[in-house]
Image (cartoon, rainbow, N blue to C red; front, side):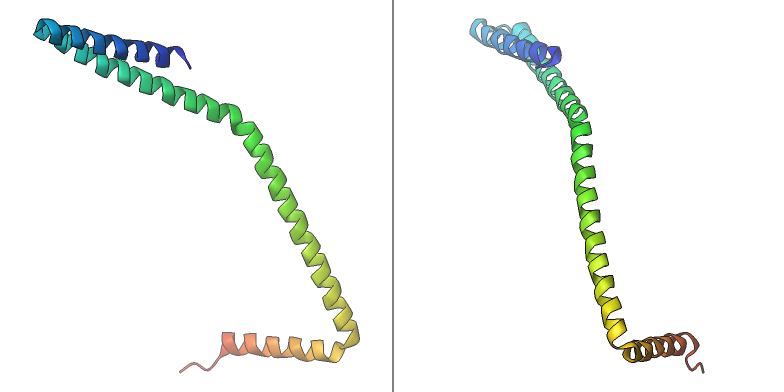
Length: 121
């Protein structure tokens, strides 16, 4: 709790008391002053709460950045491992059936060429 939260809360409570006294003695000035203090105190308290929330977020930002960074590194490592496994499987299958890979590459190349240079009217 910072000083704005405390002072705003105290001013709000003081305004409630002031309004209650104004209601009791039928004083319009006390009632108006009480409502003004309630509104001002509530606004100051709200400002203090927002200030505290921002300070908490700033204080927690380095830890959050470290957590996100470590999770990103772990995800990158998992993706690299998966790519290595897929590459080794592809290498092994290419050694086993080089003709099939050559035919597949030729078919893909033909498809790309047809798409790029297809019939034009």
